[in-house]
Amino acid sequence: MAGTRHRSLTFAEIDELLCLEEDIGDQDSDISIDDNDDDPDYVFDHQIEEEDEELEAEYFGDDESDDLDITSTRLRGNDEARRTRASPSRPSFLCKRHKTPLGRGRERVAATPDTTRPAVRWDWIDGADFEPQIFNFDESNSGIQVQTFTADSLECEFYNFFWDDNILEIIVTETNRYVYFMRGGKVLGPHSREHQWYDITVPEMKVFLALVMLMGIVKKNNYRDYWNTDPVIQTPVFSKVMSVNRFTNILRALHFSDNLEAYANNITEKMRKIRSVFDHLRSKFKEAFYPYKNLNIDESLMLWRGNIGFRQYIPSKRHRFGLKLFVLCDCKTGFVQDIVLYTGAGTEVTDDKSLGLSGAVVMTLMEPYLDKNHVLFVDNWYTSPSLFEILSSRQTGGCGTVTKRRKHMPYFPPLPNKGDCAYKKANDTLAVMWKDKREVRLLTNIHNPQMVLSHNTDRSTKQRVMKPECVLDYNINMRLVDKADAMISSIECARKTLKWYKKLFFHLIDVTMLNAHILWKHTTNKNPTLQEYVIQVVRQLLEDNAVERPMPGRHAADNPVRLTGRHFPRTLQPRENMKKKKVQKACHVCSHTTRRQKKTE
Image 1 (tube, helix red, strand yellow):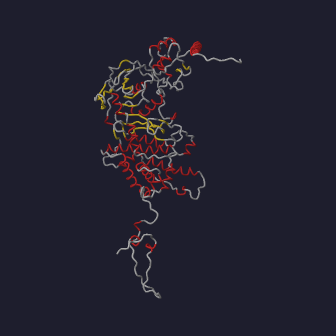
Image 2 (cartoon, rainbow, N blue to C red):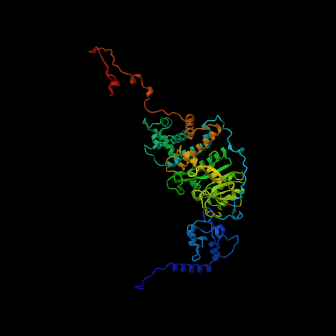
Image 3 (cartoon, rainbow, N blue to C red):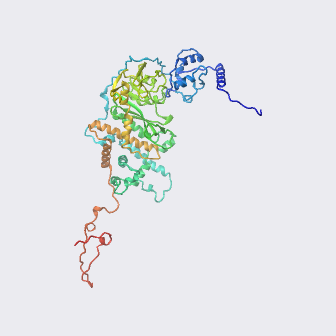
């Protein structure tokens, strides 16, 4: 209608319309909340105050059956937003498809409920009298499992255990095959480097890997600089054992799988390019060492900025962008016991999805060590009451930080003072909240609810700080994966490449050197640095497998004395029919140089 002016609705009128829409929708729909619809891999806040409980009873009834669990599906913010959203004048709206309130949890995919495992009730009570489980671990079987290692073993023997001839034969075979696959019947140019290619052998592959590891010790910007003849930056060992063109050809052709077989069998898994090497090293890690009581699972990030579907961003890591590896470490020695590469939906973990991806990773890495009284330390990405309940049933202890929004987590009232601590228990699990600079929450089934003295000193009182026992134990055992990454960074041989699986291969070499160094130290009771150990391995590999190549040109040692000593003219005997009786001939060296000897009196 012409001339009609539209006015805006007031907030009161909007509230009336929303409430009317909710009342109409509730008449024709039956909203039910299932406890199993939440994804345990994501975090939710389950603290409900008395006014929220009254509101839920008003809109959902007073049914207290086991199938109805409103507390596990309500999203909470801060106290101010919670009171505003849950006020009686305006009820919280639920997404009827996902059965969660509208907001940041709506788009998250729910985990598949586990119908084989009975449901567990979590009735949290005061945990001041909690008694932890006792896990009596037998350390007689822990340590190095290879009987051939002795105190007189060379450094190279520990390296050769992981990179034995079997896996090197596979790499050599696939590398030689890949050269002809790359050519694909194309006509090579007259100056193509591929004309110089000849099949690589296992000893030459060992030399190639030795040079790659040496590049991690001697850092240069470009790999061609290692063959530079400038005396300032020259490293002659590289040119003595392999030419730069040969090294470039091997690096370009390095391969670990048969492409034709993958195409013929329609193999599309993301790990197919490096499957043989990855599985071989995982089995060798388990074969070489059995861990001690305490274990640690954490993420490790290998730098990769290329375009790949499963690249991850972790701001707390040094590289931030890269390929994520889930690493299982022994807390006593730092030995990398097992690794799993994250490849998105195709990540190789157990089929049990009831715990989400984080719980599936834990169950996959811990499968060989369950029911053996080990203790696992994890961070808040893995920790959940459901996971710890399963670990307890499998005779495995656990301790880790946890976010307050995890499913089945208890509600703790805010702690007023720094250093205060509160405990709650349920199903052989202790929940701890301790206030430091901020509130810290942990779950444990192996610690007592008590405060102990730490090594930290309060700056104001000059007294030692009291901390919960589980916090101190967690700080000691949760740093091993980050420590391994820090040690590997000092010998990192991985260089920039267009193929992600090649860089992962070089990263696996670094991890192998770390494990070999740990085994060698515990076998020989010597304590060299990781860099010193790598240098010894490289030296022994070159001595056993390298053949010194002839250098082009005339060597300085072959120069006769007439070209290196001082030169003086001498009288020549005149020939027949010569008019001059004194004949002299110019010295070839002196006449072709710009340097002149100084005249002396």
